[in-house]
Image 1 (cartoon, rainbow, N blue to C red):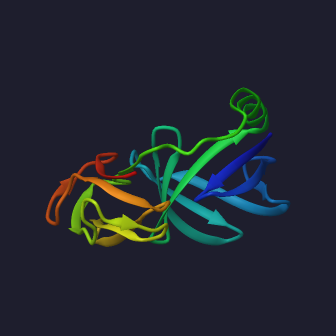
Image 2: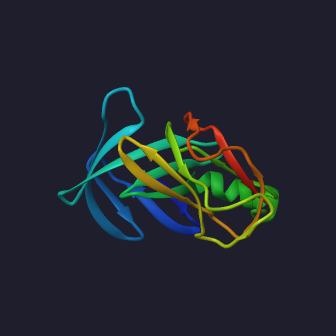
Length: 165
């Protein structure tokens, strides 16, 4: 089965052959992917290189924290993509983006203010979790419309941190 995976607005064609082999845009990789305990933490081996990933479901996507970077990913199989494009005539961008905590943690800093214009890739929040500081960046240009946290606040998994419209 082929899947179309969109990560931060870039599409990848992924085909799963068996439990250990996948292709991404035609390139074959040997993979091993296992959950570590009951947490959303996964061990990922790609061609012998080891990674630790945090994977959280969002409303219609996935939040992935890998190598200190947060990614927004959507996954559709080929059939779902065809049906969606026929019924919608294209994908429309949401009016408001809700930044949600990809993991429980402590807000270290919030370098933006309500009403501030931001560009794609601007740092919105620095979140500390498991002794690591993670920069949560804006996936698109817009304006910070509602700030719901302050430095020193604790946040839970998928808690809304701020809005960008």
